[in-house]
Structure formats: structure tokens, C-alpha cells
Length: 383
Ligand SMILES: Cc1ncc(COP(=O)(O)O)c(C=O)c1O
Image (cartoon, rainbow, N blue to C red; front, side):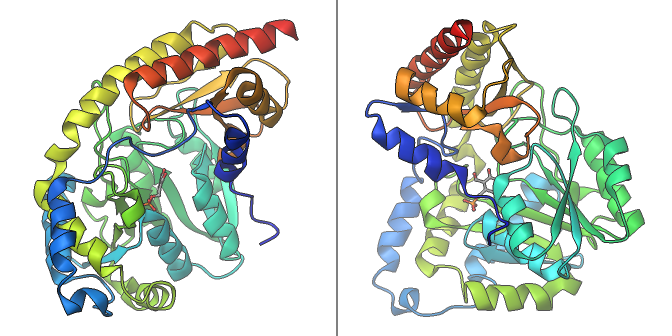
């Protein structure tokens, strides 16, 4: 555990608590809650004794059926063909199951940078090694670098699209290349798609699990946390090749026993409402994103904001030698705005920050970004 990075969000959270009135552009959550129908279903389930006991490990049949239909409809993934679904307590747990199921201690997992910090942490906790590879200047995958990173110890390549923290939506061609490379080299493709519905402009999300011949080596991970405002209910799921059923079941049985029953009942009702639930929110976020990017672009050449076509994040690279955590702390203490230093996402070669705009109302985001822009000008122009 000593080798595992400290989670950055509580560090920033601590600073925020010390400075009342701070606007947090740090949190990776949405500002809305679950659909009413999900809450109704949970309320009704309280009276049923079955809600309060252990249920089947992989998930309630009613939820598994809805997830299967959703995967066919929204992701082009046919679960009948040599695959299984496991309902988990969020996509983070799905990732941990996947790593435990496919690795031996000492194995290597390829992570394009920026990576999602909990992936790094899970890999380290399993006694494995991360092998990081750079992305290009728009945070798109670099296949040449990925090829070079593969060794005899590599077990998997991870892609997160739409990406946390960059907001990049990887091109279909590059995801297809990664998936094919994994098949040819006997690796797994771990694909985190928790932001699948959050794309803007002409960007389109593609599920690598839908590619031909992907079933036997692709592990796809999803979540209700973002699309359905479900973060606290802890429901995600994974689609994985049948031959991993035993190790994944062992991990589920040990860590979770079964997914929280009441959350699964709420999740089934949320999936009945479907993708339409988050679409108005995504349209709203698209407008917020446009104004955030426009405002942050005014910082050039002091800072550069990268291509962010999805999720609800962008990365701001600041042209300074200042320590990113020290700069983040000054932004909170002196300008009451919080962002997350990007070293937590593996970007240790520059001073960059993740700006998150999903958790707040439009006016608050505008105020927060205004403080960020003024704060950076103020601090950087004085140095
Ligand atoms: C890329 C990515 N994967 C997984 C998660 C965690 O999702 P869950 O709440 O389903 O565990 C997050 C949350 O921020 C995320 O950004």
C-alpha cells in the first residue's frame, strides 16, 4: 500500500473545507440525482423481505436482463455470444475484479497518460506494474507508443473513452487498432466507458466490445453513477469473456458477496427510463463546456486547454515551473476556486490541472472559471 498513490480528491477536499466559499471545479460528479422512478422502486422494495437478504452474486435477474438489452441497444454488444455480465458496486469495482482475474503479481498493464488514478491504484494494489504511454497533443491514443510498451509481461491495455481527466473521445479507428492489437498479442482490452453518453459536437462514443472478434479478450466497464446521478447507490457492471467467469466470481464473492439489493432494484427502474434521462443534462453540459473552453482559451499563452469532446472535464496546462499542488493550494486560499493537479493522472512532466464542470449549476461554473482565470493571471503574472 505504501507504493500506491494517495487519493488526491480528499487532499483537495481538505483544503476546500479550510476556505469557506470555495467553488470546486474538482469533483467528478454530476449535479443531478436519480430518476424519480428509481427512487419509487427503491421505496416500494423496502417492504419486501428479499430486499434485505443476500441475493445472487452476479446480480438480480431483472437487472441483468435490462443491462443485456441496454448493451445490445446502446453499445452493439451481444451478451449471448460467449460473454457474461457482472453487476458490481460501481465501475471501480469492476476494474478491480478485472485486474485480479487476469493478472499474476508482477504483470504489466499499459495505461495511456493521462490515466484515471483509481486504475493506477488498483493495478499497484494487485502487485502489478503500470507501464505508461504518452498520448498526442489532443490526448488521443498514440498507437506507436502503445506498441512499444508491450513486453512479455503485459496482460492488458486500458482505454478510458470518453476520458477522465482529459475529456478526449478516442477515435473509432484507434480503439479498433488497440482492440486488434490486444487480440493479436494475447492481451485483454480493458475499456472503461462510464462516460459513454457524455459526448459533444460531432464526437461519438464507440464500444470496443462491439467490434468483430472482440468477445474473447475485451472487458467493458460501465456505471450508473454519472448518467443516472447514481454515484452513492454504487451500481456499475462489466461485460467479460466467459472463460473468466470463475476468477471474476471469486473476486465478487470475496469483496462484495452480492451487489446491494436495493440499489439494484433502483438501477433496474433507472434503466427502464433509459438514456433519455440524461440527454437534457448532456445538452446543458454541452453549453457549459463551450463557455468553459471559451473562457479558459483567453489564458493563452499563459495556459493551454486541450481538446475535450466528452465527459465533463478538460485539462488546463499552465506555462510555469511552479509545483502544481502549491499552485492549486494558492488558487484555493487566495482565489477560492479548486481544481485537481494532473500529476494524479500520471502527468508529471508539466503543471496541469483537471477542470470539472459537471457538479455545478451553470452560473456557479461561470463564477468558478472566472476565479480560475483571474487567479492564474494574478499568480503567474506576479512570478
Ligand atoms: C473513468 C472512471 N471510471 C470509473 C469511475 C468510477 O465509477 P463508479 O462510481 O461506477 O465506481 C469514475 C468516476 O469518476 C471515472 O471517472
